[in-house]
Length: 258
Image (cartoon, rainbow, N blue to C red):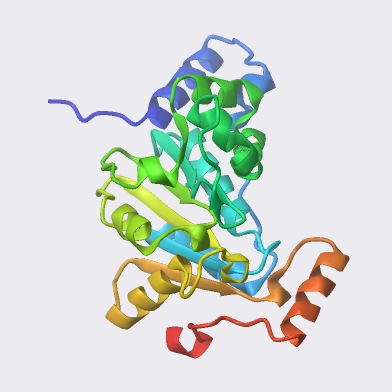
């Protein structure tokens, strides 16, 4: 029995055949196959990118503007364009300002779009609008609230990105991290503990402490500081000022991860 070829191998073979017979393929149809690699802007980003390549579960915790969800989304789209995964799941808790958003009309995608647009915009930029729309329409990119995705099993080659994890419950995060199969390229848990709407210890700090305490293998953890902010100068200044006024990681110290 012949070995099943990957999607990328099939697509590459098609382009090669077209070139052999002298057909010229318009750039817009092949652009998504040649996605440029990201270049890390900080040491923490470089480590985060390494963990996304090498670990099955990666936690990115820390300040806004440090590229936590952007880097995960870019890598996910890149893997999809190369045929290394079949699906991308984008999720986050469906709440705001500490309250459930309640019953609102529309599909899960329509409800979650305002919350997940930054990640989806990154994916669209990598794939191109046509490929992106196809993936959305055919369920290759699935957007769903964490409340509906937490109990599912993930066995196919895929990437899962959970944003705003600090606003999830411990039970939701535990349910998510214990349902991933061997086919999952990576599960990224992103968030900022400072923006938690939960009372007491939030789920993001809890899961980092849990992984460190139990020395769980194949897990990567990156803690971003205000120095890792890659946004405009004023945002960086605001984050530094916040730290001076007492902002800090409540439960996790960098020394615990060494």
